[in-house]
Image 1 (cartoon, rainbow, N blue to C red):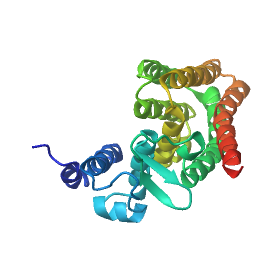
Image 2 (cartoon, helix red, strand yellow; image 1 turned 90 degrees about the vertical axis):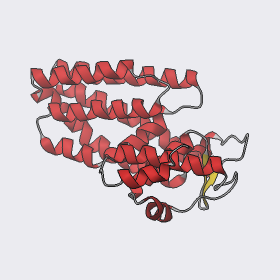
Image 3 (cartoon, rainbow, N blue to C red; image 1 turned 60 degrees about the vertical axis):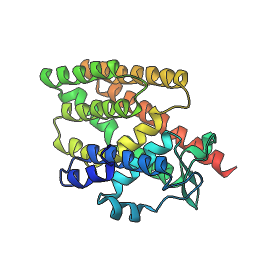
Length: 250
């Protein structure tokens, strides 16, 4: 007999490890869909009800639901709610991300552009050899993560940005990123998960080139180049979200 994921949640709820809780909530929601408790086409409970049911935070629920949207098990209907996908149904590109998640990701990116462009500049100015070595190691790990695993790609991406914050020698940059950590990872998962393998691989390669440009500027201690590379890297994502917003309005 397989141990139900909801039972696992009860024993893990006091661990404080949000990543583990998120994965368990994803499994629990998948179990409910597989068992037919959430039938195809049915609306799932709202965030507050899921928080109560699983005893976790809104951020955990939000990331779990976002993950199931990426897997096309759930679909969002703007202004209505989140529903179990019908068998064989495919959500269109503009329906893939619901309005609330899209707006939140845009707000997080706006803040990140303001914070991380200067963070990269300070990293170029102040990085120590030890911190530069650590940043290179994080970058190297990113290159061996499977592009099929959008969750690991997103977490590796976040660790790279966090390592840049460490290079800045300003602990407040790291603190801000850690505070926004789960919100950033949700955004990164939305960006890393593409409709097909070819599109995903192309995107990951492009993102890695952008990361390489940032790393190169920091290594050369070129403050202006680091600032430009980071702004270019983050602006691309914000522009994509603006495009999605405009197509929804049409």
